[in-house]
Image (cartoon, rainbow, N blue to C red; front, top):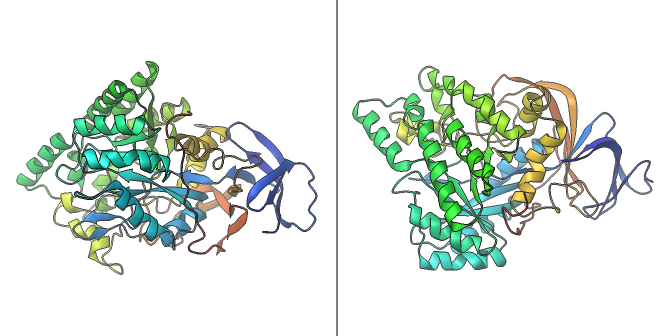
Length: 471
């Protein structure tokens, strides 16, 4: 590869803020300085632009089976193109073990699907749904040889995904002894199922009852319980898509006692609230994700958690389903659950908007500074999941995954101009300031304004080191 020189950008890392040049050779940052020579280099002028490390989204679901033939609507190709336009150059998706299946087989399936399609670099967490001696026995090899150091378990969806507390404890012990970490979907699934059945028996089928049957108390209870299990197992634990103040309180209390409890939140919990479920007719189905949106007061607690590191990073939980049945069909559409809120495909889009929303609603409002912005979107996920310093850094020897960002460009969010296959946006019509201008993946410019310069299959699989050990 020819050398690439990015000149005169304001370089922002998790700790630094300065103006300089970045010389890239063979996909890796070689030199950072001022007035670097540009002989035979491809030059990109970053004057008046911010230069960030490429974003890492540690929680996405591309072309994911949800049961009954239902799939998320983004392929690995469309989803990673969307990620790239949003300044994300690495995703961590999921490989789901089915019942009577092996974790290793789950990973192999997903690797085969992702390799020819991914346009950014990628890794996987493995979802365990059948915890038995055989599946537990595969974890050391997955960690040590396949580079998968994080395993997701569900405390919700009984009969489908949920595992019991003993399975969680056994997984934590086995994975933790080899440098792995458990990721938990923390909700009390049995109580929630009882609430769902109660609502349906009373004839309550509209989308708003998704939110009403998943109370924040049951997220808080599950978070507290799983942190105590991790404390007994003496391993770190990570709670995905934390939305409730009660769950955050459990994390804060544990961290104050020195427990290695970590958590992420998502942009929709920071900027939207449960009033979206009051939308007329079936429109509220667009906001059916789990956990559901909470009350407005909870947003203040989440922002405080981000400022004081009780929440370590922001992921998107990009899990997109179209609102309309056409053109992708009922099995990729929210309409699948039109007659029953419990059948609405559960998830929402967001992979393309994370950096812009956090900059506009976080940095510009003074809730977080630029260094914390980079920490939340790139450096912390790289460290948390064993990718640092190859990813999440602007430093000699790191991959040249870089974002040139215009802090003053104002634009309006709309599904009409995003790059995902999903046909709506949670933030339709919202005016924001701050826009991705160029994106580099290992030194190659793959986004230039509205121009796509990447190609399917250029993304590389990233074997990871230990998770949860370095924050």
